[in-house]
Length: 492
Image (cartoon, rainbow, N blue to C red):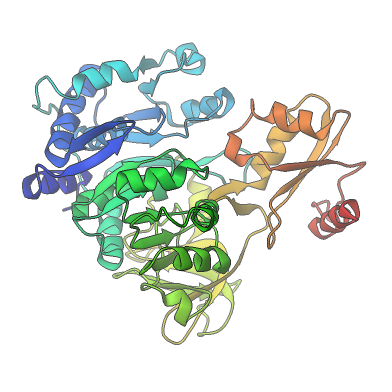
Protein backbone atom coordinates (compact mmCIF):
# COMPACT_ATOMS: atom_id res chain seq x y z
CA UNK A 1 0.00 0.00 0.00
CA UNK A 2 1.49 3.33 -1.08
CA UNK A 3 -1.50 5.69 -0.70
CA UNK A 4 -2.62 6.64 2.79
CA UNK A 5 -6.34 5.94 2.34
CA UNK A 6 -5.52 2.38 1.26
CA UNK A 7 -4.58 1.69 4.91
CA UNK A 8 -8.09 2.61 5.99
CA UNK A 9 -9.80 0.74 3.16
CA UNK A 10 -7.85 -2.39 4.06
CA UNK A 11 -8.90 -2.05 7.72
CA UNK A 12 -12.53 -1.56 6.63
CA UNK A 13 -12.36 -4.74 4.53
CA UNK A 14 -10.77 -6.85 7.27
CA UNK A 15 -12.45 -5.43 10.38
CA UNK A 16 -15.54 -3.51 9.22
CA UNK A 17 -17.47 -3.60 12.50
CA UNK A 18 -14.60 -2.93 14.90
CA UNK A 19 -14.29 0.63 16.30
CA UNK A 20 -11.65 2.76 14.61
CA UNK A 21 -11.91 6.14 16.35
CA UNK A 22 -13.60 7.66 19.40
CA UNK A 23 -13.56 11.37 20.18
CA UNK A 24 -15.87 13.74 22.07
CA UNK A 25 -18.38 10.96 22.72
CA UNK A 26 -18.62 9.77 19.11
CA UNK A 27 -17.32 6.45 17.75
CA UNK A 28 -16.87 5.36 14.13
CA UNK A 29 -16.03 1.83 13.00
CA UNK A 30 -13.39 1.26 10.34
CA UNK A 31 -16.17 0.82 7.75
CA UNK A 32 -17.98 3.97 8.92
CA UNK A 33 -14.76 5.99 8.89
CA UNK A 34 -13.91 4.82 5.37
CA UNK A 35 -17.41 5.77 4.17
CA UNK A 36 -17.22 9.13 5.97
CA UNK A 37 -13.88 9.93 4.32
CA UNK A 38 -15.35 9.23 0.87
CA UNK A 39 -18.31 11.52 1.58
CA UNK A 40 -16.01 14.29 2.79
CA UNK A 41 -13.77 13.78 -0.25
CA UNK A 42 -16.82 14.47 -2.40
CA UNK A 43 -17.72 17.52 -0.29
CA UNK A 44 -14.18 18.91 -0.60
CA UNK A 45 -14.32 18.41 -4.36
CA UNK A 46 -17.69 20.21 -4.48
CA UNK A 47 -16.04 23.10 -2.62
CA UNK A 48 -13.43 23.38 -5.37
CA UNK A 49 -10.52 21.48 -3.81
CA UNK A 50 -8.43 19.75 -6.46
CA UNK A 51 -5.36 17.52 -6.57
CA UNK A 52 -2.27 19.30 -5.28
CA UNK A 53 -4.21 22.14 -3.64
CA UNK A 54 -3.87 22.85 0.07
CA UNK A 55 -6.34 22.60 2.96
CA UNK A 56 -5.69 24.02 6.45
CA UNK A 57 -7.52 22.53 9.46
CA UNK A 58 -7.77 24.33 12.83
CA UNK A 59 -10.12 22.29 15.04
CA UNK A 60 -10.07 20.56 18.45
CA UNK A 61 -9.35 16.82 18.19
CA UNK A 62 -12.41 14.99 16.86
CA UNK A 63 -13.52 12.23 14.49
CA UNK A 64 -13.29 14.86 11.75
CA UNK A 65 -9.50 14.75 11.78
CA UNK A 66 -9.07 11.22 10.42
CA UNK A 67 -12.08 11.65 8.11
CA UNK A 68 -10.60 14.85 6.63
CA UNK A 69 -7.08 13.46 6.31
CA UNK A 70 -8.27 10.35 4.48
CA UNK A 71 -10.63 12.49 2.38
CA UNK A 72 -7.73 14.71 1.31
CA UNK A 73 -5.74 11.57 0.51
CA UNK A 74 -8.50 10.28 -1.80
CA UNK A 75 -8.63 13.42 -3.97
CA UNK A 76 -4.89 14.16 -3.88
CA UNK A 77 -5.17 17.33 -1.79
CA UNK A 78 -2.43 18.43 0.60
CA UNK A 79 -3.57 18.92 4.20
CA UNK A 80 -2.05 20.91 7.04
CA UNK A 81 -3.45 20.35 10.55
CA UNK A 82 -2.69 23.18 12.97
CA UNK A 83 -2.94 23.25 16.75
CA UNK A 84 -6.33 24.40 18.01
CA UNK A 85 -4.58 27.23 19.92
CA UNK A 86 -3.01 28.67 16.75
CA UNK A 87 -3.12 32.46 16.90
CA UNK A 88 -4.21 34.74 14.08
CA UNK A 89 -0.61 35.85 13.60
CA UNK A 90 0.62 32.27 13.21
CA UNK A 91 -2.33 31.43 10.93
CA UNK A 92 -1.51 34.42 8.74
CA UNK A 93 1.98 33.03 8.21
CA UNK A 94 0.65 29.60 7.25
CA UNK A 95 -1.97 31.03 4.87
CA UNK A 96 0.61 33.21 3.13
CA UNK A 97 3.10 30.36 2.99
CA UNK A 98 0.99 27.48 1.65
CA UNK A 99 -1.84 29.46 -0.02
CA UNK A 100 -4.71 27.07 0.77
CA UNK A 101 -8.01 27.06 -1.10
CA UNK A 102 -9.95 26.09 2.03
CA UNK A 103 -9.69 26.60 5.81
CA UNK A 104 -11.65 24.24 8.08
CA UNK A 105 -12.41 26.03 11.35
CA UNK A 106 -15.28 26.93 13.68
CA UNK A 107 -13.77 30.29 14.57
CA UNK A 108 -14.42 33.42 12.54
CA UNK A 109 -11.19 33.27 10.60
CA UNK A 110 -10.41 36.88 9.80
CA UNK A 111 -7.01 36.05 8.25
CA UNK A 112 -8.71 33.60 5.83
CA UNK A 113 -11.58 35.95 4.98
CA UNK A 114 -9.18 38.87 4.42
CA UNK A 115 -7.36 36.70 1.86
CA UNK A 116 -10.51 35.53 0.13
CA UNK A 117 -10.07 31.93 1.29
CA UNK A 118 -13.21 29.83 1.79
CA UNK A 119 -13.96 28.70 5.36
CA UNK A 120 -15.83 25.50 6.18
CA UNK A 121 -17.20 24.77 9.66
CA UNK A 122 -17.42 21.45 11.50
CA UNK A 123 -21.25 21.39 11.54
CA UNK A 124 -21.49 20.93 7.77
CA UNK A 125 -18.76 18.28 7.84
CA UNK A 126 -20.39 16.34 10.68
CA UNK A 127 -23.74 16.41 8.89
CA UNK A 128 -22.08 14.83 5.86
CA UNK A 129 -20.33 11.99 7.73
CA UNK A 130 -23.23 9.56 7.67
CA UNK A 131 -25.12 10.42 4.50
CA UNK A 132 -24.58 11.30 0.86
CA UNK A 133 -22.78 9.78 -2.08
CA UNK A 134 -19.54 7.88 -1.50
CA UNK A 135 -18.42 8.26 -5.11
CA UNK A 136 -15.04 10.01 -5.07
CA UNK A 137 -14.54 12.38 -8.03
CA UNK A 138 -11.25 13.48 -9.52
CA UNK A 139 -7.97 11.66 -10.10
CA UNK A 140 -6.31 9.48 -7.49
CA UNK A 141 -2.90 10.80 -6.38
CA UNK A 142 0.47 9.20 -7.06
CA UNK A 143 2.57 7.72 -4.28
CA UNK A 144 5.14 10.51 -4.77
CA UNK A 145 2.54 13.28 -4.43
CA UNK A 146 2.61 15.42 -1.28
CA UNK A 147 0.03 14.59 1.38
CA UNK A 148 0.96 16.68 4.44
CA UNK A 149 2.48 20.05 5.19
CA UNK A 150 3.48 19.76 8.84
CA UNK A 151 4.51 23.12 10.29
CA UNK A 152 7.33 22.85 12.78
CA UNK A 153 9.54 25.31 14.64
CA UNK A 154 12.90 26.00 13.06
CA UNK A 155 15.84 28.36 13.18
CA UNK A 156 13.76 31.26 11.87
CA UNK A 157 11.12 33.21 13.76
CA UNK A 158 8.33 31.64 11.68
CA UNK A 159 7.51 27.91 11.45
CA UNK A 160 8.48 26.02 8.29
CA UNK A 161 6.50 23.23 6.64
CA UNK A 162 7.82 19.68 6.28
CA UNK A 163 6.53 18.07 3.07
CA UNK A 164 5.45 14.44 3.52
CA UNK A 165 4.46 12.30 0.52
CA UNK A 166 2.08 9.34 0.48
CA UNK A 167 4.88 6.81 0.11
CA UNK A 168 6.91 8.39 2.90
CA UNK A 169 3.94 8.25 5.29
CA UNK A 170 2.90 4.70 4.40
CA UNK A 171 6.49 3.46 4.63
CA UNK A 172 6.92 5.06 8.06
CA UNK A 173 3.62 3.61 9.32
CA UNK A 174 4.53 0.08 8.20
CA UNK A 175 8.05 0.32 9.65
CA UNK A 176 6.87 1.71 13.00
CA UNK A 177 4.08 -0.86 13.30
CA UNK A 178 6.52 -3.70 12.57
CA UNK A 179 8.41 -2.77 15.75
CA UNK A 180 5.66 -1.44 18.07
CA UNK A 181 3.29 -4.24 17.06
CA UNK A 182 -0.04 -2.66 18.01
CA UNK A 183 -2.76 -5.33 18.17
CA UNK A 184 -6.30 -5.29 16.78
CA UNK A 185 -7.57 -5.67 20.35
CA UNK A 186 -5.72 -2.55 21.54
CA UNK A 187 -7.30 0.72 22.57
CA UNK A 188 -4.76 3.48 21.91
CA UNK A 189 -5.50 6.46 24.16
CA UNK A 190 -4.01 9.55 22.51
CA UNK A 191 -3.84 12.76 24.60
CA UNK A 192 -1.68 14.41 21.91
CA UNK A 193 -2.84 17.09 19.43
CA UNK A 194 -3.36 16.08 15.81
CA UNK A 195 -1.01 18.90 14.76
CA UNK A 196 1.80 16.89 16.39
CA UNK A 197 2.90 14.10 14.03
CA UNK A 198 3.29 11.76 17.03
CA UNK A 199 -0.43 12.23 17.66
CA UNK A 200 -1.49 12.10 14.00
CA UNK A 201 0.38 8.86 13.34
CA UNK A 202 -1.63 7.10 16.05
CA UNK A 203 -4.56 7.27 13.62
CA UNK A 204 -2.56 5.53 10.90
CA UNK A 205 -1.09 2.92 13.25
CA UNK A 206 -4.66 2.20 14.33
CA UNK A 207 -5.67 1.56 10.71
CA UNK A 208 -2.58 -0.56 10.04
CA UNK A 209 -3.16 -2.75 13.10
CA UNK A 210 -6.94 -2.60 13.42
CA UNK A 211 -6.63 -0.95 16.84
CA UNK A 212 -9.21 1.44 18.30
CA UNK A 213 -7.84 4.99 18.71
CA UNK A 214 -9.42 7.09 21.45
CA UNK A 215 -8.62 10.82 21.24
CA UNK A 216 -8.21 12.64 24.55
CA UNK A 217 -7.45 16.28 25.11
CA UNK A 218 -4.04 17.63 24.08
CA UNK A 219 -1.37 17.30 26.79
CA UNK A 220 -3.90 15.86 29.24
CA UNK A 221 -2.24 15.78 32.66
CA UNK A 222 -5.06 16.53 35.11
CA UNK A 223 -6.86 14.26 37.62
CA UNK A 224 -9.29 13.13 34.91
CA UNK A 225 -6.49 11.31 33.07
CA UNK A 226 -6.81 8.10 35.10
CA UNK A 227 -10.61 8.12 34.84
CA UNK A 228 -10.46 8.64 31.08
CA UNK A 229 -7.92 5.85 30.60
CA UNK A 230 -10.09 3.44 32.59
CA UNK A 231 -13.28 4.52 30.79
CA UNK A 232 -11.64 4.04 27.40
CA UNK A 233 -10.23 0.64 28.36
CA UNK A 234 -6.86 1.94 27.19
CA UNK A 235 -4.09 -0.59 26.57
CA UNK A 236 -1.57 1.66 24.76
CA UNK A 237 -0.53 5.17 25.78
CA UNK A 238 1.67 7.31 23.50
CA UNK A 239 3.04 9.74 26.07
CA UNK A 240 5.21 12.80 26.34
CA UNK A 241 7.10 13.19 29.64
CA UNK A 242 4.50 15.51 31.20
CA UNK A 243 1.74 12.94 30.64
CA UNK A 244 3.82 10.02 31.92
CA UNK A 245 4.95 11.95 34.98
CA UNK A 246 1.40 13.11 35.79
CA UNK A 247 -0.01 9.60 35.37
CA UNK A 248 2.61 8.09 37.65
CA UNK A 249 1.89 10.63 40.38
CA UNK A 250 -1.88 10.23 40.03
CA UNK A 251 -1.66 6.44 40.26
CA UNK A 252 0.52 6.71 43.35
CA UNK A 253 -2.35 8.57 45.03
CA UNK A 254 -5.16 6.42 43.57
CA UNK A 255 -3.72 2.90 43.72
CA UNK A 256 -7.19 1.32 43.75
CA UNK A 257 -7.87 2.53 40.18
CA UNK A 258 -5.35 1.17 37.70
CA UNK A 259 -5.82 1.36 33.90
CA UNK A 260 -5.13 -1.78 31.88
CA UNK A 261 -2.24 -0.24 29.92
CA UNK A 262 0.17 -2.81 28.50
CA UNK A 263 2.43 -0.42 26.53
CA UNK A 264 3.73 3.14 26.92
CA UNK A 265 5.68 4.74 24.09
CA UNK A 266 7.58 8.01 23.92
CA UNK A 267 9.26 10.14 21.31
CA UNK A 268 10.17 13.79 21.44
CA UNK A 269 11.64 14.93 24.75
CA UNK A 270 13.69 12.39 26.69
CA UNK A 271 11.57 10.43 29.15
CA UNK A 272 12.81 10.72 32.76
CA UNK A 273 13.68 7.34 34.26
CA UNK A 274 11.88 8.27 37.50
CA UNK A 275 8.57 8.74 35.66
CA UNK A 276 8.89 5.31 34.04
CA UNK A 277 9.80 3.72 37.37
CA UNK A 278 6.61 5.10 38.96
CA UNK A 279 4.50 3.83 36.07
CA UNK A 280 6.03 0.36 36.20
CA UNK A 281 5.48 0.20 39.95
CA UNK A 282 1.82 1.20 39.57
CA UNK A 283 0.83 -0.84 36.48
CA UNK A 284 1.66 -4.56 36.65
CA UNK A 285 3.20 -5.98 33.46
CA UNK A 286 3.65 -2.59 31.79
CA UNK A 287 6.08 -2.52 28.85
CA UNK A 288 7.88 0.62 27.63
CA UNK A 289 9.24 1.39 24.16
CA UNK A 290 11.33 4.54 23.77
CA UNK A 291 11.91 6.16 20.39
CA UNK A 292 13.84 8.96 18.71
CA UNK A 293 12.48 10.97 15.85
CA UNK A 294 11.65 14.35 14.41
CA UNK A 295 9.03 15.64 12.02
CA UNK A 296 11.45 15.50 9.09
CA UNK A 297 11.60 11.68 9.26
CA UNK A 298 8.78 10.75 11.66
CA UNK A 299 10.76 8.09 13.55
CA UNK A 300 14.44 7.34 13.31
CA UNK A 301 14.87 4.65 15.97
CA UNK A 302 12.68 2.48 18.20
CA UNK A 303 13.82 0.41 21.17
CA UNK A 304 12.54 -3.07 21.87
CA UNK A 305 10.18 -3.33 24.87
CA UNK A 306 11.92 -2.43 28.14
CA UNK A 307 15.29 -1.95 26.43
CA UNK A 308 15.72 1.15 28.61
CA UNK A 309 16.21 -1.22 31.58
CA UNK A 310 18.83 -3.30 29.76
CA UNK A 311 20.53 -0.40 27.98
CA UNK A 312 19.94 2.80 30.00
CA UNK A 313 19.84 5.84 27.75
CA UNK A 314 19.10 4.01 24.51
CA UNK A 315 16.59 5.27 21.95
CA UNK A 316 16.68 1.97 20.07
CA UNK A 317 17.83 0.95 16.61
CA UNK A 318 16.99 2.31 13.17
CA UNK A 319 13.60 1.54 11.65
CA UNK A 320 13.64 -1.49 9.34
CA UNK A 321 14.75 -0.39 5.87
CA UNK A 322 16.58 2.71 7.10
CA UNK A 323 19.98 3.77 8.43
CA UNK A 324 20.89 5.96 11.39
CA UNK A 325 24.50 7.04 11.92
CA UNK A 326 26.54 10.00 13.16
CA UNK A 327 28.71 12.39 11.16
CA UNK A 328 31.37 14.96 11.97
CA UNK A 329 31.32 18.62 10.95
CA UNK A 330 32.43 17.69 7.42
CA UNK A 331 29.69 15.10 6.97
CA UNK A 332 32.01 12.10 7.37
CA UNK A 333 30.54 9.01 9.03
CA UNK A 334 31.86 8.34 12.52
CA UNK A 335 32.77 5.06 14.16
CA UNK A 336 30.61 3.44 16.89
CA UNK A 337 30.95 5.31 20.17
CA UNK A 338 31.91 8.64 18.58
CA UNK A 339 29.57 11.55 19.28
CA UNK A 340 28.41 13.42 16.21
CA UNK A 341 25.35 14.77 14.44
CA UNK A 342 22.63 12.13 14.17
CA UNK A 343 21.86 11.49 10.50
CA UNK A 344 19.03 9.46 8.96
CA UNK A 345 18.82 7.79 5.55
CA UNK A 346 15.78 5.97 4.15
CA UNK A 347 12.28 6.26 2.66
CA UNK A 348 11.05 7.85 5.91
CA UNK A 349 12.98 11.05 5.19
CA UNK A 350 10.91 14.08 4.15
CA UNK A 351 10.72 15.38 0.59
CA UNK A 352 11.99 18.75 1.86
CA UNK A 353 10.68 22.01 3.30
CA UNK A 354 7.80 23.69 1.49
CA UNK A 355 9.12 26.45 -0.80
CA UNK A 356 12.45 26.47 1.08
CA UNK A 357 15.01 24.93 -1.32
CA UNK A 358 18.03 26.50 0.37
CA UNK A 359 16.90 25.39 3.82
CA UNK A 360 16.19 21.90 2.46
CA UNK A 361 19.65 21.69 0.89
CA UNK A 362 21.28 22.57 4.22
CA UNK A 363 19.59 19.61 5.91
CA UNK A 364 20.59 17.00 3.34
CA UNK A 365 23.89 15.28 2.57
CA UNK A 366 24.69 13.85 -0.87
CA UNK A 367 21.40 14.59 -2.63
CA UNK A 368 22.54 12.51 -5.66
CA UNK A 369 21.90 9.28 -3.74
CA UNK A 370 18.60 7.42 -4.06
CA UNK A 371 17.65 8.37 -0.52
CA UNK A 372 19.07 11.61 0.88
CA UNK A 373 20.81 11.71 4.23
CA UNK A 374 19.00 13.96 6.69
CA UNK A 375 21.14 15.86 9.19
CA UNK A 376 18.88 16.11 12.22
CA UNK A 377 20.72 18.85 14.12
CA UNK A 378 20.71 16.52 17.16
CA UNK A 379 23.81 14.87 18.58
CA UNK A 380 24.51 11.41 19.93
CA UNK A 381 26.41 8.18 19.35
CA UNK A 382 25.75 4.67 18.09
CA UNK A 383 27.00 1.55 19.87
CA UNK A 384 28.45 -1.55 18.20
CA UNK A 385 24.99 -3.13 17.98
CA UNK A 386 23.41 -0.10 16.30
CA UNK A 387 21.61 1.35 19.32
CA UNK A 388 21.33 5.14 19.37
CA UNK A 389 22.15 7.20 22.48
CA UNK A 390 20.99 10.81 22.42
CA UNK A 391 23.34 13.53 23.73
CA UNK A 392 21.82 16.92 22.95
CA UNK A 393 20.32 19.39 20.48
CA UNK A 394 21.27 22.54 18.68
CA UNK A 395 20.99 25.61 20.87
CA UNK A 396 17.93 27.04 19.19
CA UNK A 397 15.62 24.04 19.09
CA UNK A 398 14.43 22.41 22.27
CA UNK A 399 11.65 20.12 23.45
CA UNK A 400 9.23 21.45 26.08
CA UNK A 401 6.51 19.11 27.38
CA UNK A 402 7.13 16.91 24.36
CA UNK A 403 6.70 19.68 21.77
CA UNK A 404 9.43 20.98 19.51
CA UNK A 405 9.92 24.71 20.14
CA UNK A 406 12.16 27.30 18.52
CA UNK A 407 13.81 29.76 20.90
CA UNK A 408 13.96 32.24 17.99
CA UNK A 409 10.19 32.01 17.47
CA UNK A 410 9.50 32.51 21.19
CA UNK A 411 11.93 35.45 21.40
CA UNK A 412 10.37 37.09 18.34
CA UNK A 413 6.92 36.77 19.92
CA UNK A 414 8.15 38.30 23.18
CA UNK A 415 9.68 41.25 21.34
CA UNK A 416 6.30 41.98 19.75
CA UNK A 417 4.84 42.60 23.23
CA UNK A 418 4.47 46.28 24.03
CA UNK A 419 7.15 47.41 26.47
CA UNK A 420 9.62 44.59 25.65
CA UNK A 421 12.81 45.83 24.03
CA UNK A 422 14.86 42.64 24.08
CA UNK A 423 14.28 38.94 24.80
CA UNK A 424 16.14 35.64 25.01
CA UNK A 425 15.16 32.10 25.95
CA UNK A 426 17.20 29.81 28.17
CA UNK A 427 16.26 26.30 26.97
CA UNK A 428 15.40 23.50 29.41
CA UNK A 429 18.24 21.72 31.18
CA UNK A 430 17.89 18.84 33.60
CA UNK A 431 14.80 19.43 35.73
CA UNK A 432 14.63 23.13 34.80
CA UNK A 433 12.00 24.17 32.27
CA UNK A 434 12.58 26.88 29.66
CA UNK A 435 12.92 30.44 31.00
CA UNK A 436 12.24 33.65 29.09
CA UNK A 437 14.42 36.65 29.93
CA UNK A 438 13.29 40.09 28.80
CA UNK A 439 14.36 43.71 29.02
CA UNK A 440 11.02 45.40 29.60
CA UNK A 441 9.19 48.17 31.39
CA UNK A 442 6.38 45.80 32.40
CA UNK A 443 6.14 42.86 34.75
CA UNK A 444 6.91 39.23 33.85
CA UNK A 445 3.31 38.04 34.31
CA UNK A 446 2.09 40.77 31.95
CA UNK A 447 4.67 39.74 29.34
CA UNK A 448 3.62 36.09 29.44
CA UNK A 449 -0.08 37.02 29.30
CA UNK A 450 0.45 39.27 26.27
CA UNK A 451 2.37 36.52 24.46
CA UNK A 452 -0.78 34.39 24.31
CA UNK A 453 -1.97 36.63 21.49
CA UNK A 454 1.27 36.03 19.59
CA UNK A 455 2.03 32.28 19.77
CA UNK A 456 0.43 29.05 20.96
CA UNK A 457 0.10 28.50 24.70
CA UNK A 458 2.28 25.39 24.73
CA UNK A 459 5.23 27.37 23.29
CA UNK A 460 5.21 30.01 26.04
CA UNK A 461 7.81 29.36 28.78
CA UNK A 462 6.41 28.82 32.23
CA UNK A 463 8.66 31.46 33.74
CA UNK A 464 9.70 34.98 32.73
CA UNK A 465 12.48 37.03 34.30
CA UNK A 466 12.86 40.78 33.74
CA UNK A 467 16.55 41.71 33.51
CA UNK A 468 18.53 44.88 32.88
CA UNK A 469 20.21 43.50 29.77
CA UNK A 470 20.55 40.34 27.67
CA UNK A 471 24.07 38.95 27.88
CA UNK A 472 25.82 38.63 24.51
CA UNK A 473 29.03 36.97 23.36
CA UNK A 474 31.75 38.87 21.50
CA UNK A 475 30.15 37.70 18.26
CA UNK A 476 26.89 39.36 19.23
CA UNK A 477 25.07 36.09 19.96
CA UNK A 478 23.11 35.40 23.13
CA UNK A 479 25.46 34.15 25.85
CA UNK A 480 23.41 31.33 27.33
CA UNK A 481 26.06 30.48 29.92
CA UNK A 482 25.89 34.03 31.24
CA UNK A 483 22.08 33.82 31.19
CA UNK A 484 22.21 30.61 33.24
CA UNK A 485 24.46 32.38 35.75
CA UNK A 486 21.96 35.26 35.95
CA UNK A 487 19.20 32.77 36.63
CA UNK A 488 21.23 31.12 39.39
CA UNK A 489 21.86 34.53 40.94
CA UNK A 490 18.16 35.31 40.82
CA UNK A 491 17.39 32.01 42.57
CA UNK A 492 19.98 32.83 45.17
